[in-house]
Amino acid sequence: MSNTAKFGKVAVLFGGKSAERAVSLESGQAVLDALLRSGVQAEAFDPQDRSVTELVGYDRAFIVLHGRGGEDGQIQGVLEWLNLPYTGTGVQGSAIGMDKVKTKQIWQGSDLPTAPYRIISKNTNLDSVIADLGLPVIIKPVHEGSSVGMSKVEKAEEFAAAIEKATQHDAVVMAEKWITGREFTISFLNGQPLPVIRLQPPADVAFYDYEAKYQRNDVQYGIPCGLSEAEEQNLQALCLRAFQAVGAEGWGRIDAMQDQQGQFWLLEVNTVPGMTSHSLVPKAAQAVGYSFDELCIAILEQTLTESV
Image (cartoon, rainbow, N blue to C red):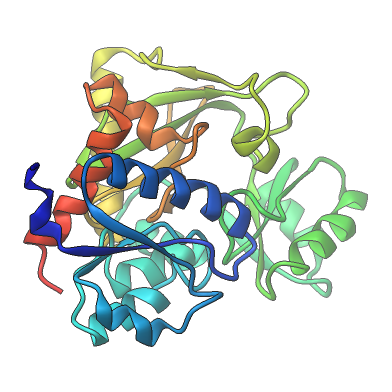
């Protein structure tokens, strides 16, 4: 018998009601299968189908709910109320991390480099946005993940359609300065950075979008990432500061860019990253010797030590 009995009965929370439900179902099933293979008494728990009051029958929770309801502090608050240990970031850090503007404000206030942005609506004076940010820009819903609702805008006349697309997902929309350069992602396990991964979407993709993240098999993942050892350490240290600044804990991921002058820019934090076959945290963990099953156990072990 393995030492997994210490975990008791584990609810693997996945599915939910957000725009990222499909990804969550895939991630959650992968985590559930890994825990079961490892001998953990784990069960699927989809909050869309069951009342969260039923969680009182469990000893701890592994959160694999992406997007709103699962990554924004809501389910974390329920679990705190039930005094149930759970994986990952707490209520406040989750709420901040899900809000791209709040995240940027905290990073700016902490002297951490993040791309300039403006909150916009259909009534915003676009000339002033272009004067502030230049073109191209990227339009993003403020409270969505997985690149849902995002568009690259290269000409003023493309703004209206991009804003319309984003507002289908969120009432709050932002324009962010487009950074031309190399994209990297930095994963965290037990609060420490893993090897940096360089993301190289195929040439026909404007940016690392939803399709590139989850549906295509021609995205290149660079490990090693192509940075010098000193640059990689600088980026890891920068992202660790950024991760801690928003109150993120345990495991997660930060996406960053390096512009053509070599300057790093923080994009956003992800407090419940994907755990699918395409996902980045498992790739980074594998680079330092973790199998997928070992990674899932390492994340679940955080619930034994962190207070709730």
